[in-house]
Image 1 (cartoon, helix red, strand yellow):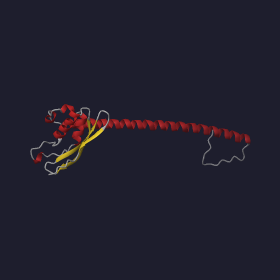
Image 2 (cartoon, helix red, strand yellow):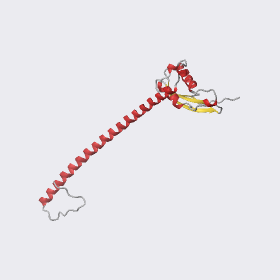
Image 3 (cartoon, helix red, strand yellow):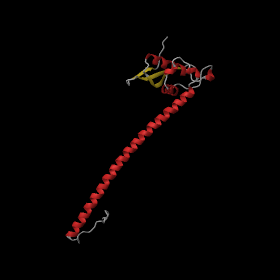
Image 4 (cartoon, helix red, strand yellow):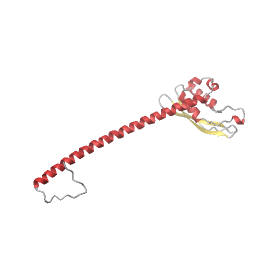
Length: 180
């Protein structure tokens, strides 16, 4: 088989009809072979793309799980024995404790008086425990700061996000306004 270069413009004027038919047949076979190889390459590319997407999904899942485990380990380091002795502490899952410790106000106010290292930790745990006592199948899935009183130390208000066993979401709390 010989290939004709695309850049050249071959001169077929001196060829016989039999020679032109032979060249035509050869070119048709080449076109069929190249088209077939092209289809195979496209199929391989699609398979590779699908595999890469699956690998990326798996990596994202692994990275998320790794981060979740790191957050749980950090939460274990933050939770002290005083907090573990709160009535109902066992109702809090590792993931809930991780959310609490990651999203609570973590400024250290001990230098301003006799305050615990994590000012809001016990209060947040008590509020989540109280909610879980009323709705035992609810899980804390988010915690956001909703505002605070400008005092020293500040009193921070939180917005709690819960999910029930049926997958419904509930937001509770936020900024509290007290009028005299």
